[in-house]
Length: 329
Ligand SMILES: NC(=O)c1ccc[n+]([C@@H]2O[C@H](COP(=O)([O-])OP(=O)(O)OC[C@H]3O[C@@H](n4cnc5c(N)ncnc54)[C@H](O)[C@@H]3O)[C@@H](O)[C@H]2O)c1
Ligand SMILES: [Mg+2]
Image (cartoon, rainbow, N blue to C red; front, side, top):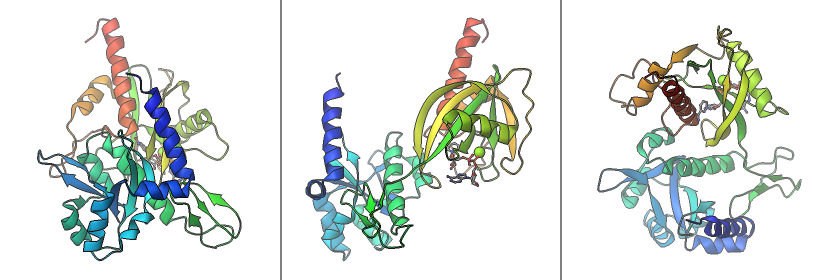
């Protein structure tokens, strides 16, 4: 299947909507809308008991807004998110000043905290739910110019805000974070912060300091948090992460010398850091998603929507391969 042409056309279309206020206003008339109530996305349960992101067409949304006593032009407050596969423009809209239960009733859905929604939504919908929330949050917290204190004004798509007094343009921001799975060849190093849910261990991570490269951050963070020296850095992938503010996660693998694995934990940052065997990791990966009605397991790893999970999966696959090559089970 050749995806180049539609993707290229879609990208050009979206670029136009981002930059051309008139074109974006026109697109609102045939848009798909994700609603958020105080940053919690609206979910709907399908007849087969699966939860999805509720997406409303313009006419349906306008109708609902009027029913709950809101002007239908409120639709224009939406922010452009992207395009569906069919080329329909997608928008997010914060409806936090409308009565929540009235809206839930009219929309036949429920507003769910994003962290919880990640456990309920099918995989591909989580990044869209996160993007919608992140854009709303950024606009809510960037209403004033940090140089003049004057209000900033959004463009129609929400791709930037301008202070007309200083002329400064503000674009939505993500803070770069490096996340690394360190291996000594047969075990991998996972750590936990006190604020993590009970029993959850993840890969090491840290914000990039101003002026640092990914490699510099990675060496510094591993040295700071567990006192180890890493080598053989390999890029794995990236992810936008909405909690607690937007981060841009850059995920890597790295190794340490098998004879230099003694961890020296920075207790101000981490509660614990430990080496885990292949057997422990494969068992943790097999565990079903967390059930809030049960006690959490003693050791578990972040769920599949987190890039930490991808790193751990990749490491386990790599271990399995090398075990096969060496005739081990
Ligand atoms: N998606 C995933 O799989 C995954 C896994 C692990 C961590 N994360 C995310 O990565 C982020 C960073 O991880 P960490 O907590 O280990 O970072 P970290 O080790 O750099 O420690 C966080 C501390 O760094 C300081 N800091 C420096 N720059 C900051 C900035 N731009 N924003 C906020 N704090 C800043 C603060 O004092 C903060 O308490 C967290 O927000 C976390 O949610 C995501
Ligand atoms: Mg850290």
